[in-house]
Length: 378
Image (tube, rainbow, N blue to C red; front, side, top):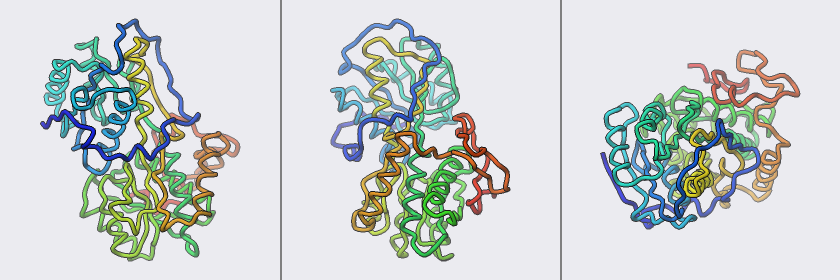
């Protein structure tokens, strides 16, 4: 187990380029009324952070950590002393999670953020042992004694699919390098494919799977295979920069994921889908400090929480940038719904009827692929 008291100087300044607020599509839903709690100056809060990976992994853990640092910065919390980061805490090692939480509590943590979905069940149990500590968990399992938070990432994926199809002039074929075959990844693939279809009704998305959350060799090989099959533009749902770097080496282009990957492959990355967690974290911290926090709150935010990194202006023409921004506004205003009908799966079944919109529960539990995805069923 690695423990770090992190300095601001160690953190990539990605979030400075993102819009701070979340759009109106996101909801913070309280599942029960909050209990009375002692108040505290927000700048004095001690924040615990549990990560399954290292915080400079170039992907998921880094996006979470940067969100926490940005929230602390905005609220005057000293990250040198009051942000306690625990890295490489396996989601499958219950005893390690328990000892990590115990250590954070002993060091005075007011809030403990579980930054991967695999911690949710054990943190819900541990909350009963430490009722004075606020537990916040990235998941959608709907426990009634821990705060849960998630982002409508499909909004950003839809925009990146739209961008890829606009750039892919003269071809209907796009690619997608996927990690694991599970609901959140299927959601990303489907949203990317639907965004591509919004730009080009004939667009098709070929998917290749790494069967791992982090495997540089397989991710690179999948990107190369897509390129060898004639695909020039692709999306991804992976944590490493292997796909962008392979694209750059072979004259192809892609969308980065989790964090801004343009620096890893400046001649290939058009933009990146970026998880902008800071507004959610700030709200949790402020409500903890003023005693109004509801330990059963469920955050499911869209808008600028499902952010795009700055466009690569050397690659993306201004006209296309403007079209993507215009579509972003329509999504934020509710004029465009990503999962609106009529929507069919890749077997021809109607998923959503014309004039209707898929429910949040069905979006979160996707077990299908939309009709312009190829290779979705392994």
